[in-house]
Amino acid sequence: MLLFVAAWFAISVGSVKVPLSVLWNPSSADAASANIIWKIRVPRVILAGLVGAALAMAGAAFQGLLKNPLADPYTLGVSSGASVGAVMTIFFGISTSSLGLYTLPIFSMLGAMAAMVLVLSFARLVDRSMKMETLILTGIIVSAFLSSVISLMIALTGDELRQILNWLMGSVSMRGWPYIKMIWPFLVIGGLMLWMNRKELNALLFGEERAHYLGVNVKRSKWMILVGGSILTGCAVAVSGTIGFVGLVVPHMTRLLFGADHRHLLPLSIINGATLLIVCDLVARTIIAPSELPIGVITSFIGAPVFAYIFFRQRRKGR
Image 1 (spheres, helix red, strand yellow):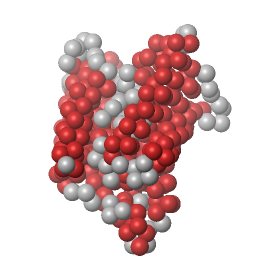
Image 2: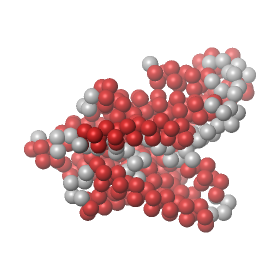
Image 3: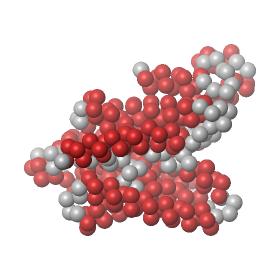
Image 4: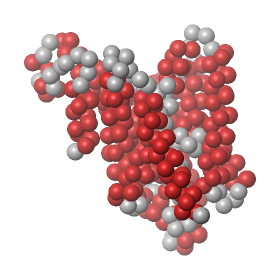
């Protein structure tokens, strides 16, 4: 219901008033109104929903796998890795005829996977138990290093500077249908990989040793979850830039409302993530209209206090 209402408002509200009857009866409106609805607002709302769904599902999977409520693609440095992959593609002008439209998301996903492996490997070297604080601090370290790599490429760039900066701020504005074609195959692949491991995620909540005794191939499941989450993060970052905290806030609130069973948590996170990002995008483009804010600004205003609250509660519970 909330997703439907959010999408309805996002399509109907804007600087130009267009009747929603254009959606089901395009012939009832002039060409300009039909173009505004079908070429600008509808693809923007769909893309925001897909990006929110991808980030929320990846966050739910990472939190379940690592048994850490502060884990998400942004805090673990996975989004930064995806950003490096995408910025390198733009900076070096990488384009292959075999990959075509999918060059950017594939390099973005490779960056996300590399960052995830780097974070987990370094955290295990520091602390084999991989405590919450270790993982978060490792994610911050990796994010800082990758941010410096991005800054270096920005400093060296020329004509691509504006394109890179606009992309890094995070937005679904003026993307259109080609970006939806770019994200949906990888969203399906990554989502299916996580959905196939929903029972394994439930078992891993009790620890790797107990999961093994329950018949879970722990090593295979962990890699499938990490790869699936990285695919979702990479495809989302490739089409929208860096949008933080969606993967932190949505799974945590969904878990509080509906429980930790991943058979329910994963699909509900998809719905709630899509709803949240559609609403955030609506606020971003209307709050200072006719100008608009980067959508990452709105999600950070929501996510940072939630991050602080979860961290504070976990520390008090630990003491």
